[in-house]
Length: 218
Image (cartoon, rainbow, N blue to C red; front, side, top):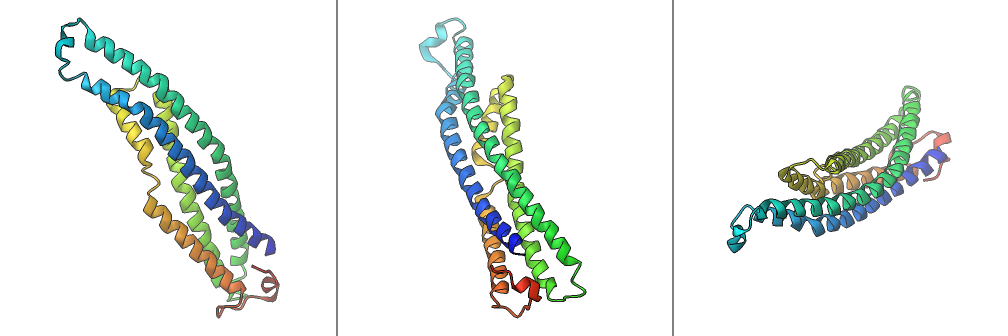
Protein backbone atom coordinates (compact mmCIF):
# COMPACT_ATOMS: atom_id res chain seq x y z
CA UNK A 1 0.00 0.00 0.00
CA UNK A 2 2.92 2.35 0.66
CA UNK A 3 3.82 2.27 -3.04
CA UNK A 4 0.27 3.18 -4.01
CA UNK A 5 0.19 6.04 -1.50
CA UNK A 6 3.43 7.45 -2.91
CA UNK A 7 1.95 7.11 -6.39
CA UNK A 8 -1.12 9.05 -5.25
CA UNK A 9 1.04 11.90 -3.96
CA UNK A 10 3.00 11.94 -7.23
CA UNK A 11 -0.29 12.00 -9.12
CA UNK A 12 -1.63 14.96 -7.13
CA UNK A 13 1.60 16.96 -7.52
CA UNK A 14 1.70 16.03 -11.19
CA UNK A 15 -1.80 17.39 -11.79
CA UNK A 16 -0.80 20.76 -10.31
CA UNK A 17 2.37 20.88 -12.40
CA UNK A 18 0.50 19.94 -15.56
CA UNK A 19 -2.18 22.61 -15.07
CA UNK A 20 0.48 25.22 -14.29
CA UNK A 21 2.49 24.41 -17.43
CA UNK A 22 -0.61 24.29 -19.63
CA UNK A 23 -1.71 27.70 -18.33
CA UNK A 24 1.69 29.19 -19.10
CA UNK A 25 1.76 27.81 -22.65
CA UNK A 26 -1.78 29.02 -23.29
CA UNK A 27 -1.01 32.49 -21.93
CA UNK A 28 1.99 32.85 -24.25
CA UNK A 29 -0.03 31.44 -27.14
CA UNK A 30 -2.83 33.97 -26.66
CA UNK A 31 -0.29 36.80 -26.75
CA UNK A 32 1.09 35.49 -30.04
CA UNK A 33 -2.37 35.17 -31.55
CA UNK A 34 -3.44 38.64 -30.46
CA UNK A 35 -0.29 40.09 -32.01
CA UNK A 36 -1.43 39.06 -35.49
CA UNK A 37 -5.22 39.12 -35.05
CA UNK A 38 -5.33 42.82 -36.01
CA UNK A 39 -4.76 41.67 -39.60
CA UNK A 40 -8.29 40.28 -39.55
CA UNK A 41 -9.63 43.65 -38.44
CA UNK A 42 -7.74 45.35 -41.27
CA UNK A 43 -9.15 42.91 -43.82
CA UNK A 44 -12.68 43.45 -42.51
CA UNK A 45 -12.23 47.23 -42.87
CA UNK A 46 -11.64 46.72 -46.59
CA UNK A 47 -15.36 46.00 -46.95
CA UNK A 48 -16.16 49.61 -46.06
CA UNK A 49 -15.31 52.88 -47.76
CA UNK A 50 -11.65 53.49 -48.59
CA UNK A 51 -12.13 57.14 -49.44
CA UNK A 52 -9.98 58.36 -52.32
CA UNK A 53 -8.23 54.96 -52.43
CA UNK A 54 -11.37 53.56 -54.06
CA UNK A 55 -10.19 55.21 -57.27
CA UNK A 56 -7.28 52.80 -57.57
CA UNK A 57 -8.07 49.70 -59.61
CA UNK A 58 -8.25 46.37 -57.70
CA UNK A 59 -7.08 48.10 -54.50
CA UNK A 60 -9.37 45.99 -52.32
CA UNK A 61 -8.41 42.65 -53.85
CA UNK A 62 -4.69 43.38 -53.85
CA UNK A 63 -4.67 44.69 -50.28
CA UNK A 64 -6.83 41.83 -49.08
CA UNK A 65 -4.51 39.32 -50.70
CA UNK A 66 -1.40 40.85 -49.11
CA UNK A 67 -3.02 41.01 -45.67
CA UNK A 68 -4.16 37.38 -45.92
CA UNK A 69 -0.66 36.24 -46.87
CA UNK A 70 0.77 38.24 -43.98
CA UNK A 71 -1.86 36.79 -41.64
CA UNK A 72 -1.00 33.19 -42.50
CA UNK A 73 2.75 33.88 -42.60
CA UNK A 74 2.60 35.00 -38.96
CA UNK A 75 -0.40 33.17 -37.51
CA UNK A 76 0.39 29.60 -38.53
CA UNK A 77 3.98 29.69 -37.18
CA UNK A 78 2.69 31.22 -33.94
CA UNK A 79 0.18 28.40 -33.52
CA UNK A 80 2.75 25.83 -34.57
CA UNK A 81 5.09 26.93 -31.79
CA UNK A 82 2.26 26.57 -29.28
CA UNK A 83 1.20 23.17 -30.62
CA UNK A 84 4.75 21.88 -30.22
CA UNK A 85 4.74 22.96 -26.57
CA UNK A 86 1.30 21.47 -25.95
CA UNK A 87 2.39 18.22 -27.62
CA UNK A 88 5.43 17.95 -25.36
CA UNK A 89 3.22 18.54 -22.35
CA UNK A 90 0.85 15.77 -23.43
CA UNK A 91 3.62 13.27 -22.70
CA UNK A 92 3.20 14.26 -19.07
CA UNK A 93 -0.55 13.87 -19.60
CA UNK A 94 -0.01 10.25 -20.65
CA UNK A 95 2.11 9.59 -17.57
CA UNK A 96 -0.59 11.00 -15.30
CA UNK A 97 -3.18 8.84 -17.04
CA UNK A 98 -1.05 5.74 -16.48
CA UNK A 99 -0.69 6.54 -12.79
CA UNK A 100 -4.44 7.02 -12.47
CA UNK A 101 -4.96 3.67 -14.17
CA UNK A 102 -2.56 2.00 -11.73
CA UNK A 103 -4.52 3.41 -8.78
CA UNK A 104 -7.77 2.28 -10.37
CA UNK A 105 -6.39 -1.26 -10.82
CA UNK A 106 -5.27 -1.28 -7.18
CA UNK A 107 -8.71 -0.08 -6.09
CA UNK A 108 -10.33 -2.92 -8.01
CA UNK A 109 -8.10 -5.40 -6.18
CA UNK A 110 -9.29 -4.01 -2.84
CA UNK A 111 -12.91 -4.11 -3.95
CA UNK A 112 -12.72 -7.88 -3.98
CA UNK A 113 -12.01 -7.87 -0.22
CA UNK A 114 -15.09 -5.86 0.77
CA UNK A 115 -17.08 -8.91 1.86
CA UNK A 116 -14.26 -10.07 4.14
CA UNK A 117 -13.22 -6.65 5.47
CA UNK A 118 -16.22 -4.26 5.57
CA UNK A 119 -14.06 -1.24 6.47
CA UNK A 120 -12.32 -1.54 3.10
CA UNK A 121 -15.50 -0.25 1.49
CA UNK A 122 -14.86 3.31 2.72
CA UNK A 123 -11.25 3.28 1.55
CA UNK A 124 -12.32 2.01 -1.86
CA UNK A 125 -14.89 4.80 -2.03
CA UNK A 126 -12.28 7.50 -1.37
CA UNK A 127 -9.93 6.02 -3.96
CA UNK A 128 -12.78 5.88 -6.49
CA UNK A 129 -13.48 9.58 -5.92
CA UNK A 130 -9.83 10.45 -6.47
CA UNK A 131 -9.59 8.46 -9.70
CA UNK A 132 -12.85 9.94 -11.03
CA UNK A 133 -11.71 13.50 -10.25
CA UNK A 134 -8.34 12.94 -11.94
CA UNK A 135 -10.00 11.42 -15.00
CA UNK A 136 -12.44 14.34 -15.24
CA UNK A 137 -9.60 16.86 -15.08
CA UNK A 138 -7.49 15.05 -17.65
CA UNK A 139 -10.49 14.63 -19.94
CA UNK A 140 -10.97 18.42 -20.08
CA UNK A 141 -7.41 18.96 -21.25
CA UNK A 142 -7.50 16.05 -23.68
CA UNK A 143 -10.58 17.46 -25.42
CA UNK A 144 -9.03 20.92 -25.55
CA UNK A 145 -5.81 19.55 -27.03
CA UNK A 146 -7.81 17.83 -29.79
CA UNK A 147 -9.58 21.13 -30.51
CA UNK A 148 -6.27 22.97 -30.82
CA UNK A 149 -4.78 20.31 -33.09
CA UNK A 150 -7.85 20.48 -35.35
CA UNK A 151 -7.71 24.28 -35.57
CA UNK A 152 -3.98 24.28 -36.31
CA UNK A 153 -4.21 21.64 -39.05
CA UNK A 154 -7.12 23.41 -40.69
CA UNK A 155 -5.33 26.76 -40.69
CA UNK A 156 -2.11 25.15 -41.85
CA UNK A 157 -3.84 24.18 -45.10
CA UNK A 158 -4.50 27.86 -45.74
CA UNK A 159 -7.90 27.40 -47.39
CA UNK A 160 -10.11 28.57 -44.51
CA UNK A 161 -12.48 31.51 -44.94
CA UNK A 162 -11.77 34.66 -42.97
CA UNK A 163 -14.91 34.29 -40.86
CA UNK A 164 -13.89 30.77 -39.88
CA UNK A 165 -10.40 31.96 -38.98
CA UNK A 166 -11.88 34.59 -36.68
CA UNK A 167 -14.07 31.97 -35.00
CA UNK A 168 -11.13 29.59 -34.66
CA UNK A 169 -9.04 32.22 -32.90
CA UNK A 170 -11.92 32.98 -30.54
CA UNK A 171 -12.18 29.29 -29.65
CA UNK A 172 -8.38 28.99 -29.31
CA UNK A 173 -8.13 31.87 -26.85
CA UNK A 174 -11.30 31.03 -24.91
CA UNK A 175 -10.59 27.30 -24.37
CA UNK A 176 -14.23 26.14 -24.25
CA UNK A 177 -13.35 22.75 -22.77
CA UNK A 178 -11.49 24.24 -19.81
CA UNK A 179 -13.86 26.46 -17.87
CA UNK A 180 -11.88 28.06 -15.02
CA UNK A 181 -14.73 27.68 -12.53
CA UNK A 182 -15.23 24.00 -13.35
CA UNK A 183 -11.50 23.27 -13.23
CA UNK A 184 -11.12 25.04 -9.88
CA UNK A 185 -14.05 23.03 -8.49
CA UNK A 186 -12.53 19.74 -9.67
CA UNK A 187 -9.14 20.61 -8.17
CA UNK A 188 -10.79 21.60 -4.89
CA UNK A 189 -12.77 18.36 -4.80
CA UNK A 190 -9.58 16.41 -5.50
CA UNK A 191 -7.84 18.07 -2.55
CA UNK A 192 -10.79 17.21 -0.31
CA UNK A 193 -10.69 13.57 -1.40
CA UNK A 194 -6.98 13.41 -0.62
CA UNK A 195 -7.53 15.02 2.77
CA UNK A 196 -10.16 12.41 3.64
CA UNK A 197 -7.73 9.67 2.66
CA UNK A 198 -5.02 11.18 4.86
CA UNK A 199 -7.44 11.35 7.80
CA UNK A 200 -8.25 7.66 7.38
CA UNK A 201 -4.59 6.64 7.57
CA UNK A 202 -3.98 9.08 10.43
CA UNK A 203 -6.74 7.43 12.44
CA UNK A 204 -8.82 10.63 12.55
CA UNK A 205 -11.98 8.90 11.35
CA UNK A 206 -14.08 6.01 12.61
CA UNK A 207 -12.72 3.85 9.82
CA UNK A 208 -10.43 1.11 11.07
CA UNK A 209 -8.23 -0.37 8.38
CA UNK A 210 -6.78 -3.89 8.50
CA UNK A 211 -3.31 -4.24 10.04
CA UNK A 212 -1.49 -4.66 6.72
CA UNK A 213 -2.97 -1.40 5.47
CA UNK A 214 -2.56 0.56 8.70
CA UNK A 215 1.20 -0.05 8.55
CA UNK A 216 1.32 2.11 5.46
CA UNK A 217 2.05 5.71 6.34
CA UNK A 218 0.37 8.58 4.54
